[in-house]
Amino acid sequence: MGEVVGKMLENLLFNRKNETLDHVYASWLDSMSYKESFQPYLAKFNLPSGFDPWAVSLSHPFKQVDEQWLKEVGENLQNKDKLADFLIKISARHDNKQAQVVGINIWGDVKALIEFDGKHISYLSSLSETIGFYVSHFYKLDSAIRRLYSLFLNNRKLIEPFQELYKEQVTILLDMWFKFFNNATLQHPRRGVLLGWARRSFECGATQNIQH
Image 1 (cartoon, rainbow, N blue to C red):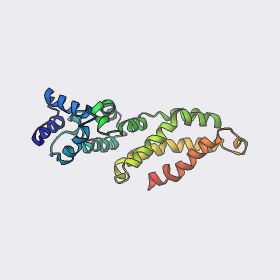
Image 2 (image 1 turned 90 degrees about the horizontal axis):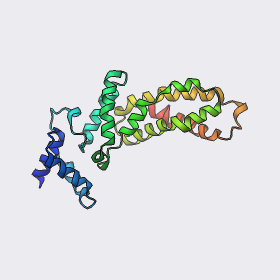
Image 3 (image 1 turned 45 degrees about the vertical axis):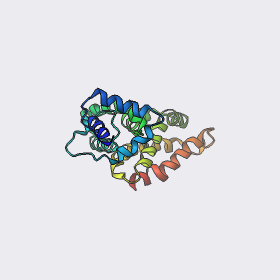
Image 4 (image 1 turned 90 degrees about the vertical axis):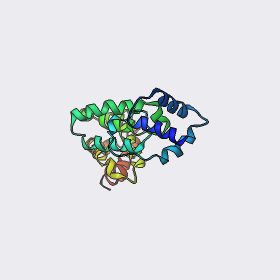
């Protein structure tokens, strides 16, 4: 059994597209009765050197490969051409059923951070609009960085580029918030929404989580 599983995992790692092994893998993860038995085999499998992480099957179960992706994406956040190519792979990985089953759940949050368009922040003209923007749009960014931070508490270097990306946007929105949040607006019925967010951003988002 161990030898067969090894071949199955190698098939995924080197994306050999063996239909039989791909089917066995998908069926194993689909089985409510047997999918838990997969983890011990995966834990014993040692990734060899010399493989291309971007050529691995999108269905693979190797978190180390996802971490290699994350590192390379983080290093190229300012390279629009590379980032566009990465987003295609990231989106496909995010939507992959087997990836979801084995608990790979970081790519939706990474996409939220990369794809966020902050240009609309400059058009906000009131506290009400700022709160509305946070509730409708920015909260996704806020939630994404917090989930990534909790997942990589022991590997902060890996998500530092994404924290910096978040920091750029949250600083702009906080500046806009302070612009409108004065004595005349303290009675806004939803002031607590943005006040709570601003406090959290300073306590563990825009300061400690980003600057350690």
